[in-house]
Each structure stands twice: as structure tokens, then as C-alpha cells.
Image (cartoon, rainbow, N blue to C red):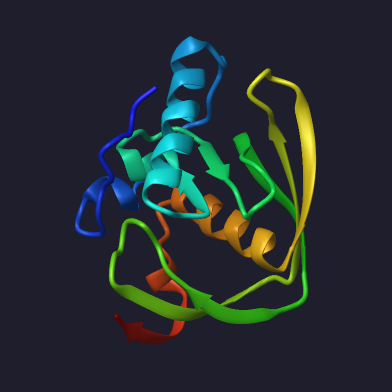
Length: 150
């Protein structure tokens, strides 16, 4: 496993749409492990493959309950509103208030290729939305209501 180099907000790869993963092989498993290691080193709660330069639909999240790896995540339900501060490992030093759903439901494949569903509330819902946005070339700054510089 290895810590990967992060891409930052001026990198055009962060604005591109990621491709679905057809086969979960050892390369994808290694990428997922590297992403988890990178997320922990950078003290984030989520990381999307484009943030390490890979245009594939893969995200990892840990909001304090252990890491979750989501392959080809698809938002199938969202409900409510929750305005709160967000930041991003790819946009250091900038935070902003973003309106996200209070509750979401996401279908995905786990690292073994099994179809799963996760329901997230509050921080987990926010992290899921934020990371799925990355897979579509969208940054939190595109949705920000009010910004704060560190």
C-alpha cells in the first residue's frame, strides 16, 4: 500500500467525469487501499479516485465508524436539507457552507463486487454527496453558499 499524490483544484482532472469500473481486480483493490491510506494521512473523511488522478468511479469514506469502499456509487434517494461547512483535501485552506441532503441512500458495489446499499444521515450523507460529486467533476466550491478562508 502507498500514499498517493493528491490533485489540487487547478488540476483539470478534477473537472472530468469518471468512468464506471467494469471489473474489480487487484489493481482496483490496491487503489482502494491506497486511497484509504491517503485519506487517513491527510486527515480527511472521504476521498474520490479523481483526487489521486484516477478517473474511475471509486470513493472511500470514514466518518469515524471504519472505512467504507464504494465502487460505482449511485444516489438513489435524497431527502431534507442540511447547511453546514465543508472542506476538501483537494482545495486546502478553503471552507464553505453547502446545502446537502440530510439523508441519502446510495447503491454501490463493495470491494468484493457485491451489490450493497447504504443509508447515510448528516455527516455521512454529506460525505457521500461530496465524494460522488467528485466522480462527476463537481467541486464543493461549485455549490457553496458562503466561503471562509483559513
